[in-house]
Length: 258
Ligand code: GLN
Image 1 (cartoon, protein in one colour):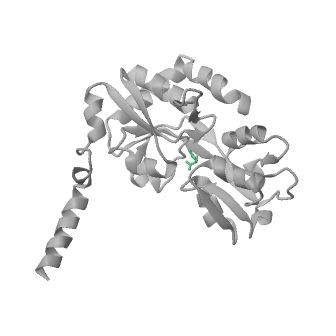
Image 2: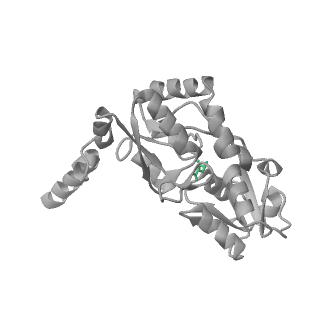
Image 3: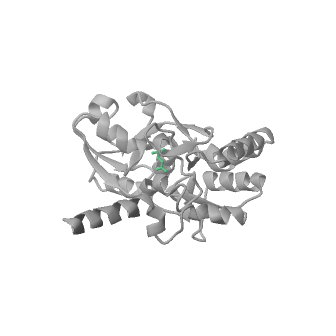
Protein backbone atom coordinates (compact mmCIF):
# COMPACT_ATOMS: atom_id res chain seq x y z
CA UNK A 1 0.00 0.00 0.00
CA UNK A 2 2.77 2.41 1.00
CA UNK A 3 4.55 1.64 -2.25
CA UNK A 4 1.43 2.51 -4.20
CA UNK A 5 1.06 5.81 -2.36
CA UNK A 6 4.71 6.63 -2.99
CA UNK A 7 4.30 5.87 -6.65
CA UNK A 8 1.16 7.95 -6.95
CA UNK A 9 2.87 10.79 -5.10
CA UNK A 10 5.86 10.62 -7.43
CA UNK A 11 3.54 10.72 -10.42
CA UNK A 12 1.66 13.71 -9.01
CA UNK A 13 4.88 15.58 -8.26
CA UNK A 14 6.16 14.78 -11.70
CA UNK A 15 2.93 16.02 -13.27
CA UNK A 16 3.03 19.18 -11.17
CA UNK A 17 6.53 19.94 -12.34
CA UNK A 18 5.84 18.58 -15.79
CA UNK A 19 8.56 20.48 -17.53
CA UNK A 20 11.12 19.51 -14.91
CA UNK A 21 10.49 15.85 -15.80
CA UNK A 22 10.93 16.58 -19.51
CA UNK A 23 14.10 17.53 -21.30
CA UNK A 24 13.53 21.26 -21.00
CA UNK A 25 13.61 23.29 -17.81
CA UNK A 26 10.41 25.08 -16.78
CA UNK A 27 9.82 28.06 -19.06
CA UNK A 28 12.43 26.62 -21.40
CA UNK A 29 11.32 28.78 -24.26
CA UNK A 30 11.44 32.01 -22.26
CA UNK A 31 15.09 31.37 -21.40
CA UNK A 32 15.94 31.94 -25.05
CA UNK A 33 13.66 34.99 -25.02
CA UNK A 34 16.15 36.64 -22.70
CA UNK A 35 18.77 36.08 -25.36
CA UNK A 36 16.58 37.94 -27.85
CA UNK A 37 15.04 34.96 -29.55
CA UNK A 38 11.30 34.36 -29.92
CA UNK A 39 10.48 30.70 -30.49
CA UNK A 40 7.33 30.40 -32.56
CA UNK A 41 5.29 27.25 -33.07
CA UNK A 42 3.36 26.67 -36.28
CA UNK A 43 1.98 23.87 -38.44
CA UNK A 44 3.44 24.50 -41.88
CA UNK A 45 0.70 22.70 -43.80
CA UNK A 46 -1.89 25.45 -44.06
CA UNK A 47 -1.38 27.51 -47.20
CA UNK A 48 -1.27 30.46 -47.72
CA UNK A 49 -0.73 31.10 -44.00
CA UNK A 50 2.09 28.60 -43.49
CA UNK A 51 3.64 25.98 -45.71
CA UNK A 52 7.09 24.64 -46.48
CA UNK A 53 8.93 26.66 -49.10
CA UNK A 54 11.16 25.21 -51.80
CA UNK A 55 14.08 25.21 -49.37
CA UNK A 56 12.07 23.21 -46.83
CA UNK A 57 11.71 26.14 -44.42
CA UNK A 58 8.27 27.32 -43.25
CA UNK A 59 6.96 30.41 -45.05
CA UNK A 60 3.63 32.12 -45.73
CA UNK A 61 1.55 34.99 -44.39
CA UNK A 62 1.73 34.03 -40.70
CA UNK A 63 5.47 33.42 -40.87
CA UNK A 64 6.11 36.80 -42.51
CA UNK A 65 3.77 38.46 -40.00
CA UNK A 66 5.39 36.98 -36.90
CA UNK A 67 8.85 37.84 -38.25
CA UNK A 68 7.70 41.44 -38.73
CA UNK A 69 6.22 41.43 -35.22
CA UNK A 70 9.49 40.01 -33.86
CA UNK A 71 11.41 42.75 -35.62
CA UNK A 72 9.24 45.45 -34.00
CA UNK A 73 9.86 43.77 -30.63
CA UNK A 74 13.59 43.57 -31.26
CA UNK A 75 13.52 39.78 -31.27
CA UNK A 76 14.89 37.25 -33.69
CA UNK A 77 12.23 34.72 -34.67
CA UNK A 78 12.83 30.98 -34.76
CA UNK A 79 10.05 28.83 -36.25
CA UNK A 80 9.26 25.35 -34.96
CA UNK A 81 7.02 23.22 -37.14
CA UNK A 82 4.75 20.79 -35.30
CA UNK A 83 1.32 19.19 -35.48
CA UNK A 84 -1.53 21.67 -35.18
CA UNK A 85 -3.11 19.66 -32.40
CA UNK A 86 0.08 19.96 -30.29
CA UNK A 87 0.40 23.74 -30.54
CA UNK A 88 -1.80 24.95 -27.68
CA UNK A 89 -0.03 22.68 -25.18
CA UNK A 90 3.37 23.73 -26.55
CA UNK A 91 2.77 27.45 -25.90
CA UNK A 92 4.73 28.44 -22.81
CA UNK A 93 6.77 25.22 -22.73
CA UNK A 94 8.29 24.26 -26.08
CA UNK A 95 7.54 27.58 -27.78
CA UNK A 96 6.96 31.17 -26.67
CA UNK A 97 3.99 31.80 -28.95
CA UNK A 98 2.10 30.04 -31.73
CA UNK A 99 0.84 31.40 -35.03
CA UNK A 100 -1.02 28.93 -37.21
CA UNK A 101 -4.21 30.42 -38.61
CA UNK A 102 -5.48 29.59 -35.16
CA UNK A 103 -9.08 30.50 -34.48
CA UNK A 104 -9.85 32.16 -31.17
CA UNK A 105 -11.91 29.59 -29.35
CA UNK A 106 -13.25 29.45 -25.79
CA UNK A 107 -11.72 26.11 -24.97
CA UNK A 108 -8.27 27.10 -26.23
CA UNK A 109 -8.60 30.37 -24.32
CA UNK A 110 -8.65 28.36 -21.10
CA UNK A 111 -5.04 27.34 -21.77
CA UNK A 112 -3.61 30.29 -23.71
CA UNK A 113 -4.11 34.03 -24.11
CA UNK A 114 -4.91 35.31 -27.59
CA UNK A 115 -3.53 38.47 -29.19
CA UNK A 116 -5.88 40.83 -30.98
CA UNK A 117 -7.22 39.07 -34.03
CA UNK A 118 -5.36 39.68 -37.29
CA UNK A 119 -7.66 37.91 -39.75
CA UNK A 120 -11.34 37.06 -40.21
CA UNK A 121 -11.94 33.53 -41.44
CA UNK A 122 -14.69 31.05 -42.20
CA UNK A 123 -14.86 27.29 -42.64
CA UNK A 124 -15.55 26.10 -46.20
CA UNK A 125 -16.75 22.73 -47.41
CA UNK A 126 -14.68 21.10 -50.13
CA UNK A 127 -16.37 18.38 -52.18
CA UNK A 128 -15.69 16.58 -55.44
CA UNK A 129 -16.47 18.64 -58.53
CA UNK A 130 -19.61 16.66 -59.32
CA UNK A 131 -20.95 16.48 -55.74
CA UNK A 132 -24.47 17.65 -55.04
CA UNK A 133 -23.70 18.62 -51.44
CA UNK A 134 -24.73 22.26 -50.95
CA UNK A 135 -26.26 22.68 -47.49
CA UNK A 136 -25.82 21.54 -43.90
CA UNK A 137 -28.71 19.08 -44.36
CA UNK A 138 -26.83 17.49 -47.29
CA UNK A 139 -23.82 16.88 -45.03
CA UNK A 140 -25.81 14.76 -42.57
CA UNK A 141 -24.60 11.18 -42.44
CA UNK A 142 -21.68 11.86 -44.81
CA UNK A 143 -18.05 10.87 -44.40
CA UNK A 144 -16.23 14.09 -43.59
CA UNK A 145 -12.47 14.62 -43.57
CA UNK A 146 -10.98 17.19 -41.20
CA UNK A 147 -7.67 18.07 -39.64
CA UNK A 148 -7.49 16.78 -36.07
CA UNK A 149 -8.30 19.36 -33.42
CA UNK A 150 -9.32 22.14 -35.80
CA UNK A 151 -12.54 24.12 -35.83
CA UNK A 152 -13.49 22.09 -38.94
CA UNK A 153 -13.18 18.99 -36.73
CA UNK A 154 -15.41 20.63 -34.06
CA UNK A 155 -18.09 21.48 -36.65
CA UNK A 156 -18.06 18.00 -38.23
CA UNK A 157 -18.12 16.36 -34.81
CA UNK A 158 -20.62 18.59 -33.00
CA UNK A 159 -22.83 20.20 -35.61
CA UNK A 160 -23.25 17.79 -38.51
CA UNK A 161 -25.85 15.13 -37.86
CA UNK A 162 -24.53 11.56 -37.90
CA UNK A 163 -21.31 12.51 -39.66
CA UNK A 164 -18.58 9.88 -39.95
CA UNK A 165 -15.56 12.01 -39.15
CA UNK A 166 -12.13 11.03 -40.53
CA UNK A 167 -9.40 12.95 -38.73
CA UNK A 168 -6.04 13.65 -40.36
CA UNK A 169 -2.84 15.24 -39.07
CA UNK A 170 -2.47 17.16 -42.33
CA UNK A 171 -5.21 18.87 -44.30
CA UNK A 172 -3.70 17.82 -47.59
CA UNK A 173 -4.21 14.17 -46.62
CA UNK A 174 -7.92 14.85 -46.06
CA UNK A 175 -8.06 16.52 -49.49
CA UNK A 176 -6.22 13.59 -51.09
CA UNK A 177 -8.79 11.22 -49.63
CA UNK A 178 -11.55 13.44 -51.04
CA UNK A 179 -9.96 13.16 -54.48
CA UNK A 180 -9.64 9.38 -53.99
CA UNK A 181 -13.28 9.14 -52.94
CA UNK A 182 -12.54 7.96 -49.39
CA UNK A 183 -14.39 10.92 -47.88
CA UNK A 184 -17.33 12.86 -49.30
CA UNK A 185 -16.50 16.29 -47.96
CA UNK A 186 -13.70 18.13 -46.19
CA UNK A 187 -14.32 21.02 -43.81
CA UNK A 188 -11.40 23.42 -43.79
CA UNK A 189 -10.72 27.14 -43.59
CA UNK A 190 -11.57 29.30 -46.60
CA UNK A 191 -8.12 30.30 -47.85
CA UNK A 192 -6.55 26.82 -47.69
CA UNK A 193 -9.77 25.50 -49.30
CA UNK A 194 -9.24 27.89 -52.22
CA UNK A 195 -5.57 26.91 -52.52
CA UNK A 196 -6.48 23.21 -52.63
CA UNK A 197 -9.29 23.92 -55.10
CA UNK A 198 -6.80 25.43 -57.51
CA UNK A 199 -4.19 22.70 -56.84
CA UNK A 200 -6.77 20.06 -57.75
CA UNK A 201 -8.53 22.13 -60.41
CA UNK A 202 -11.48 20.39 -62.03
CA UNK A 203 -11.51 17.59 -59.46
CA UNK A 204 -12.83 19.38 -56.38
CA UNK A 205 -14.79 22.52 -55.56
CA UNK A 206 -14.76 24.75 -52.48
CA UNK A 207 -18.20 25.76 -51.19
CA UNK A 208 -18.68 28.99 -49.26
CA UNK A 209 -19.32 28.39 -45.55
CA UNK A 210 -22.12 30.96 -45.68
CA UNK A 211 -24.22 28.29 -47.45
CA UNK A 212 -23.75 26.12 -44.38
CA UNK A 213 -24.38 28.97 -41.95
CA UNK A 214 -20.98 28.56 -40.32
CA UNK A 215 -19.97 31.27 -37.87
CA UNK A 216 -17.20 33.74 -38.60
CA UNK A 217 -13.84 32.89 -37.05
CA UNK A 218 -10.95 35.10 -36.04
CA UNK A 219 -7.28 34.16 -36.20
CA UNK A 220 -4.96 35.29 -33.44
CA UNK A 221 -1.54 34.54 -31.99
CA UNK A 222 -1.55 32.26 -28.95
CA UNK A 223 0.59 33.24 -25.96
CA UNK A 224 1.11 31.77 -22.50
CA UNK A 225 -1.58 32.78 -19.99
CA UNK A 226 -0.71 36.09 -18.36
CA UNK A 227 2.36 36.64 -20.56
CA UNK A 228 3.78 40.13 -20.64
CA UNK A 229 4.45 39.52 -24.31
CA UNK A 230 0.75 40.06 -25.04
CA UNK A 231 0.83 43.88 -24.99
CA UNK A 232 4.07 43.92 -26.96
CA UNK A 233 2.62 41.64 -29.62
CA UNK A 234 -0.58 43.70 -29.85
CA UNK A 235 1.42 46.94 -30.05
CA UNK A 236 3.63 45.52 -32.80
CA UNK A 237 0.56 44.32 -34.70
CA UNK A 238 -1.04 47.78 -34.43
CA UNK A 239 2.15 49.42 -35.71
CA UNK A 240 2.34 47.02 -38.67
CA UNK A 241 -1.26 47.91 -39.54
CA UNK A 242 -0.50 51.61 -39.27
CA UNK A 243 2.66 51.57 -41.37
CA UNK A 244 1.14 49.52 -44.21
CA UNK A 245 3.28 46.41 -43.66
CA UNK A 246 0.26 44.33 -42.72
CA UNK A 247 -1.67 45.22 -45.89
CA UNK A 248 1.39 44.56 -48.00
CA UNK A 249 1.64 41.06 -46.50
CA UNK A 250 -2.05 40.43 -47.16
CA UNK A 251 -1.52 41.49 -50.78
CA UNK A 252 1.60 39.36 -51.13
CA UNK A 253 0.36 36.14 -49.56
CA UNK A 254 -3.44 36.12 -49.37
CA UNK A 255 -4.96 38.40 -51.98
CA UNK A 256 -4.65 35.96 -54.85
CA UNK A 257 -6.40 33.19 -52.92
CA UNK A 258 -9.29 35.38 -51.77
N1 GLN B 1 -8.53 27.84 -38.08
C1 GLN B 1 -8.58 26.44 -37.76
C2 GLN B 1 -8.45 26.26 -36.27
O1 GLN B 1 -8.00 27.13 -35.59
C3 GLN B 1 -7.53 25.63 -38.51
C4 GLN B 1 -6.13 26.05 -38.26
C5 GLN B 1 -5.07 25.15 -38.88
O2 GLN B 1 -5.32 24.03 -39.29
N2 GLN B 1 -3.85 25.63 -38.96
O3 GLN B 1 -8.78 25.24 -35.75
